[in-house]
Length: 261
Image (cartoon, rainbow, N blue to C red):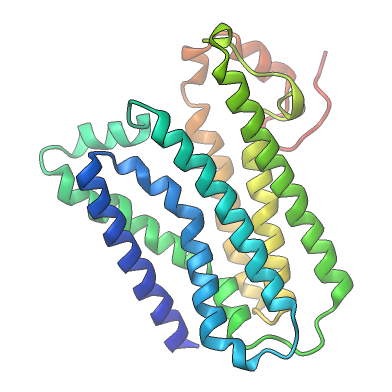
């Protein structure tokens, strides 16, 4: 197991160094966002190649497919958005201002390698599941967690699509999206990502990952709700969009529910 963990860690570090070099060429560290999902797909595929000789069932391949489909959708969504934006994301621009001069080399550690380490930690259930899959996986329970994953993919994908369509209309400049999935939760895409990670962990657990790897979806839940997701986005959004105050009063923050009148 330790050998597999080390191989995946080295692969992640190598990927992050390459993406960092790409950021130096483009002058934009935000390109790392487009490689977040593919990093997990890379880890899953690497484990599949290294350990497939020990698999007696097809369920591990299903989990690899789940991770890869989610990663591809996220990469296409974020990559397209980054390609069309003329300015760097506000988060990274603030980092650039804070750590200049020398941000170009400091970013390797505080942005790229840091996210790589977080990625490797979050992927522990996947690596553990692919290390030694359990014989006789409960197909009903696997289907339940698969349904959780699929529901999350729906919320994440449809939520992002609705937001992109809303932003593409110049008439919506400065306005707040409160229709579709955004009528029931202020962050359907983050809620969807939340379900995706619990689906990944549930399937990995059924394949033999130890229960303590539940720390992975818990960590992602904290990030999504309190740190880099909802918490960061809502920090100053009301200052930029005054209508958000009324929207925030009527609509649930994270978990979907009917809006208040």
